Length: 393
Image (cartoon, rainbow, N blue to C red; front, top):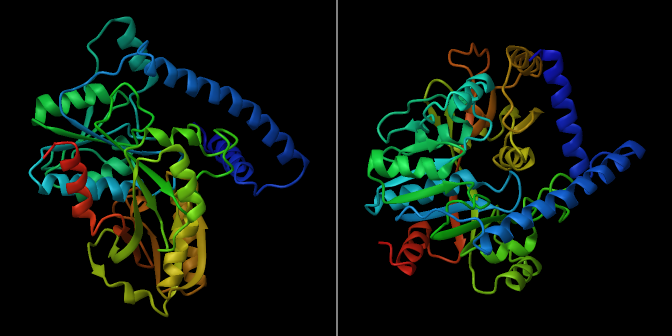
């Protein structure tokens, strides 16, 4: 794919995002929003028809005979799901469960189309799932594995991480190859072929359901009423204040679900490539540059300002964007011109940086972790409650 065509695709994607979040103005944006709304009605019909087929047992899920914990959301991007998956899988591992994480590997590098086409024509054996980590070693890079699976594999020794769009196949592989008795489905709320023993739904308190439209006019993957499918609802990115209207809406659709409120807290800075860790106080009063390719960059940038960093510039890229050498030339040029003392990015973006990147200005990533604010004394108690409630200790 030519760089010119890629830039055009990126521009279209960014404009679509601006229309979805009502940031774009003018007649063109209004017309495009109307077109997207028409597509949303079609998408809503498909989603609800699919759910009806599974509910009526016309389509069947495939049980695997083990505890299946589904972690997901109703919206696309930005709920802070990966830190929750990491903490949850780690807590289960620490309680003696043999855990594997199953992911679809969003925007990971799949085999080329021609190879899949030839395999289908020749009835070749189905390719095995991609094992990002066998629990001891990280075996794939972020481009092949996907950003989140690679990050989880790096941070969770003892937990295999497996990528495949067919999570049933991936789950069978985890059970057969690694002897797992617990599967954590990363971003699995919409994956109906594998039924969850526990369904954990994440809701971003700062933007719970967007404009309440389904894709592609809004950020919803399925209607708000599907809150009823959750066993536990995590209210993420909380500032500690109660949101009575949001909780009332949740109770309207799911009066029995337990609510667990949590916040994403910065923990430390780590040097990209060097492994050096620094306390958060390092940023206070320093001239800082930032860049990120995540769904909600505003929250990341706010962390840096709240930690006392003097933000001299910030570059925002599309979610899961693959940085080019030209991007780094531009970032470093601006960093030198503005005399910044360091550049900060997110942990998810750090896994996409090329090894051996020459850095005239040091780059650090900000490590975030989950803190329970309400609904359980701490994360360990939340995991214990979930396990005991379903007799799966």
